[in-house]
Length: 150
Ligand SMILES: [Fe+2]
Ligand SMILES: [Fe+2]
Image (cartoon, rainbow, N blue to C red):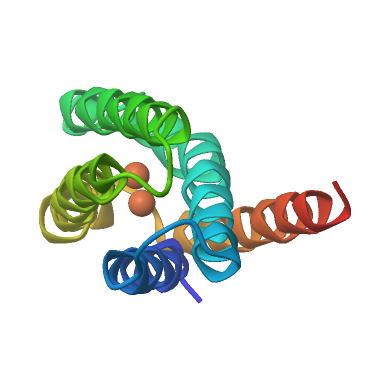
């Protein structure tokens, strides 16, 4: 597996969780569970993606700007999550904020998949694409395991 495929697989999980959450309402156990899962996915993905993908690309002239842009969006996503955390789940504002997060994340994933991956594909060696995928997946596995123990 190459790094792009590994990242895309987790992007799909994020899209699905966001979609499910936009169809929930009120303060329910199911909503809490899906939201917790979404947060874990988003946060673990951003860390592992920065560590094993962006760090390689921020070093190269062709991808330095895209890398900085992507990392800035990770911070914006974090801030939206914080805002949702502070909002009462039973209020209509919660779903509004969630939808803002959905738009932001969808935009970010599209940027990565349609633009960044194309350029990164030319910058990384074939060997790197494979080894980064392994490292990324190991890190994700580890952080999801830690999350389930906590
Ligand atoms: Fe990503
Ligand atoms: Fe990202």
